[in-house]
Amino acid sequence: MRIRIGDGDPGDGRPGGDATDLTGRFADWLVKDRSVGRHVTLTRERAGTADGGMSGQALEWIGLALGSGFSAAALVYAHLNFRASLPPRRRPAARLVVEHNGVRVVIEDGGPADAARIARLLGAGDAAGDSPDGAAAGEEDPSART
Image (tube, rainbow, N blue to C red):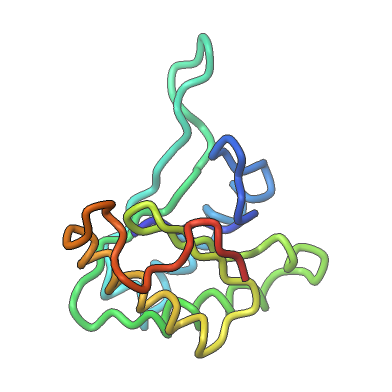
C-alpha cells in the first residue's frame, strides 16, 4: 500500500512542495504512532532524478508493508491527529491519499466510513487476481474522491 498527503489527483504523480513536506512529516508521525508504527514497515519513495540531477529529492509516497495487528482505523486516526497538529491554513491540503493495486482512495476528514473504505480497498486488492480485468468485485472507482 502507498500513501501520501496532498491532492488526490496529482496529475503527473508528483506532489508540490507543500505536499512533499507534509508527506515527509506524516511519515515521521506514523513511525512514532504506536497504534500504526509497530504494525507496518515504512519506506520513503523519492521522486525520480531531474535532468542532470544525481538523485530524486522530493518524497512522493510512503510505502507501507502491513503486518498483523494493523488497523485501517488506526491509520485514519493517525491522519486525523496529524492533521489537527497542523496550522489551520495547512489542514485543507492534508488529504490522505491511499493507493493499493492501482486503486486510489482520498480521505479528507476521516471517520469510521473512511476506515471502512481503506479496509475494503486492502481486502479487494487481495482478490484482484480473481477478476479478468484485475479489479475485484465491489472495488472503488480509481477516480473516486471524498
